[in-house]
Length: 165
Image (tube, rainbow, N blue to C red):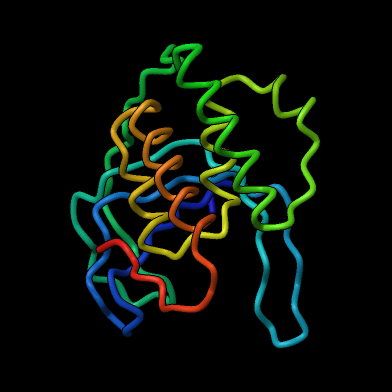
């Protein structure tokens, strides 16, 4: 852990040594909480995405990779219609899930903070979260997030949810 930063990447399947997805995220450690069983909970703030170049052969407790930081267009914003559509869908989704949201605070967020923040906290399955992480642009991530909120918001729990692969 350098500069209180750590990189995280998911395996493609929940098996020991399973191949890793091609995109992960670097996060700054904000808080560390020691658990009674010797594990730790880390509160991370995502700072950058990265593309996997290759996995390294190491004998450490953690898998290690060579990666390239994903350059992002920090100036990209949503159109007024995209932002409005997203906020309408987010309200409907929050209502369907019984969430209490401070919408005045949400409206003050910039587009990137809003879309990335909702992508991180939304209760989607790991494959859906990975798809959000891999979306090339903020606009693509927003569109996928709307689709996922529509799907999960309309699901009544009476049937099995099919995850994105």
